[in-house]
Amino acid sequence: MINWPDVERAGAVARDGTARLGGGLLAAATALIAKARTAAKPLHPRGEVWTARFAPAPDLSRHPDVVWLTDVMTDRVELRVSTAIGLRPGWPDVAGIALRFSLADRPVGGRHVALRRADLLLASTGTGPLTRFLLAPTRHPDQHRLTTLLPYRGTAHPVVFALSPQPSGTVGAAPDYEFAVAHGTGPWRLCGRLRLGERVQRELDFDPIGNLPPGLDQYSWVRLLRSPAYRTARRRHAE
Image (cartoon, rainbow, N blue to C red; front, top):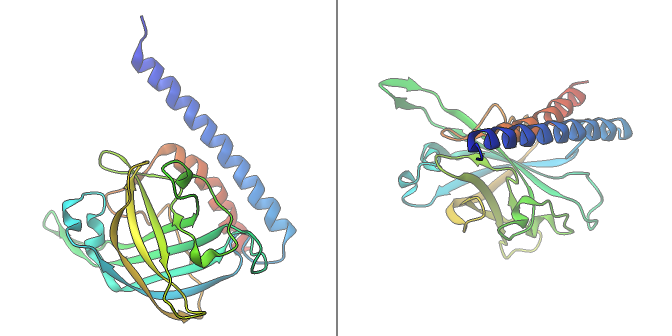
């Protein structure tokens, strides 16, 4: 007779072990890239920082995995647009956007709680139910959908976010973006729109591990996969 709890525990151990191994390999690769290049950042070495304004979609409060977006300070959004390797324009590279939402304070359980900020990292991926979890190098980073790639733990399902560029119609102008959410491989649901403001000359230090969107969490295997490489990148940047 199969003991299903034991099978589930064995599966979790195997999954976390694989994620830990993958995290170590990613950290080693990040360190090698850092040694091979002169830029301060081993990945996404050059980027443009923009201010943005967020226009939320209606009825967000009805959906527990995105209700935190109702606390976004609409004119306090920042993003950094970059490519992973930093190759010359026209060469295929993985596009990336680091996105920061500043969140207003709100009362929780009778106490005034500062929600502060939520940082999300998005990269160019495929567009299908499964390929949204696979990186996709692109020659046109300003025309490619980006997703968070690794899912968050939601209230009942895995949660993935996406940014889809919307051409402005003006040659050379930066695109605006539609911000959407999906449960795992499910359909995308529009959460709002980001309209870029102005480009600013400053660097931002994003922390997708410490600045999680309220109400969401990271799976243990995601943390094991992401944390070593992220710590390595931050350490190399500080050296």
